[in-house]
Structures are given as structure tokens and as C-alpha cells.
Length: 347
Image (tube, rainbow, N blue to C red):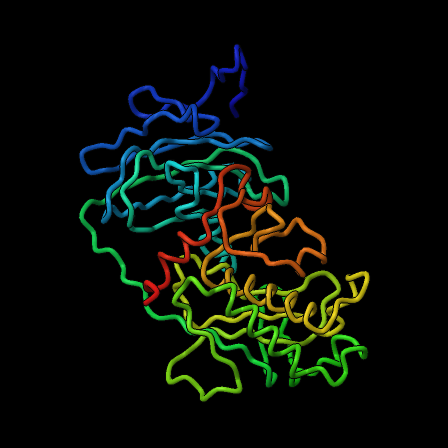
């Protein structure tokens, strides 16, 4: 166990990297991580509540493949989270657990750089929920000249016919055909109006991307799609996704908007068009997760989790915003830049 002594803001017992370099406590104090001739380095540190270790990876070029693995040190209870940021302190890649269902809480990133920038940063912190602090060790590798992945077309199906969705770590939900009366009896007879507004809102939110949006009123696509279901009830959330699918590796994952009694948190009750906008914004939010986006802290952003129900009635957008502290205690997320890496260019 290491005990830190702070003198003039410096941790005299901070772990030293190759070349006598210590990790910084923020972006400004991050020192360059020395890589050996094979492009590798070993890192280590100790994370307490609220602490972030930051390393500079220097300049990275398109085709640089960055592989990072961070795990609890022997005897440590730390549940680490790692994030790579660009020079604007925007997320390039973020990971909490390699495979939580298998009990693998180590963090792992394996991504190829698409935009030259200097510096990129690597940051290490702890899982926000819980008190799993402690020491970590990790491996960093940069492989030059790797192929840059070409994003494939992504289709999302807005499913108003009803179906079944299983949320890992939660449960299986069954939805019935969409009926506005299940939102609230006040909306009875307005199913078509509200459905049209939901579709319009989702289309508007993704207008600057190449995402293909279809509904169960359209002919079935010939390939697998991600699906957003509408129905069921939750006392605690408006929607849920099967995963935050970093790099959109699964183009067939699903999400759910809990539309039954959806208007309960609103006061006063929204108009039919208003409730359609709110449901459409939640649908876009959950689809954002399926494309790899995390939560942010900005009520004007679609990925926000800080606002009240009324903020869903506004014209929220995919934008650059501070990360939610529940995701990472520093940095920003540029939604459009991340979407641009996992979706083909818009024609």
C-alpha cells in the first residue's frame, strides 16, 4: 500500500513511468508517455475517489492502432475506467469493463486513429458508482500503419408493431402494438398523429448523418437492423438500450422507449405533438447509445441525463458537451465526430 504526501500540489509517492515521468492529474499536467522501440509502455498508479491519472500519448496519425489494457493491481479492489481523448479533450474511445458478464472488470481499448492530432491523452479513473478504489497496472501499445476501418451502412427500425427485447442485466420486455391511449387516456385516438411526430423527430435528429431510418410501416429491410421498440413501463427511466456499443460493432442491437404512462413525469401534460417530440428525442437518445454515445451533462443535448422531463419537449441535438460525471469526471463528447466514425459519410 502506498501513502501519498502532498507538498506544493505534488504527490511525492506518485508512480514513475519509464524515464522518470509521473502521470498528471489533469490534461495540463500530463507528461508524454515514453514508448519503447516496439511502441509499448507499462503504466501504473493509484486511484482514489475523484482522482484521474492522465498521460500524453503525443501525436498520433491516421492508421495508428492504440491498444490499452488497464486492470486492478494484485490485491487491489479498483474498478478502472479508461478514456482516450484528442487534443480538444473530446472522447476518442472509452471503456469501463472488458466483459462484465464474464466478471472481467479490466478496461480495454483497441481503436485505430482516423484523424491526426497532437496530443492524444490517456486517462484512468474509477467507476463512479461504488467505492472500488486502489492501484492499477496497464499496458499501452501503438501500432503504426494499420488499416482504417470503413464504416458500414446502419439501419434503424422504429418498431410500432410490438415485440420482445432483452436488456442485459435487467429483464425481458414485451411491447404491444403502439397505442397512444397507453401513454395516457387523454391521447386516445391520436396514435397516428403522435407516431408521425415521433418519426419526424428521430429523422430530424439524425438529419446530418447517413443513418437509414425505417418503420414497421415500410417494407422489411433485406439486412439486419437495430430496432427501437415503443411500449412497456418503467418507474425510473424513459428508455433503455442493450448496450453503449462503442464503434458500433453490433449493427443489430436494440433499444426501448417506455411509452406506457410516458406522460406521468410531465406537468402540465404535453400536447399530442409535444409528447411525440419527447418520445422521439428519447428514441434518438437510445439509438445514440447503440452507436456508441455516452451520457453528457447539457440539457440541450440529446445524450443529456441532467435535465427534467420538460427538457425532452425542446429541440435537443447531437452536439459537443461535457461528459456526465457518472461516465468520466473530465472531458467532453463530440457526438457528431463519433457518429462520423461509425457511419458512412452522408451523400
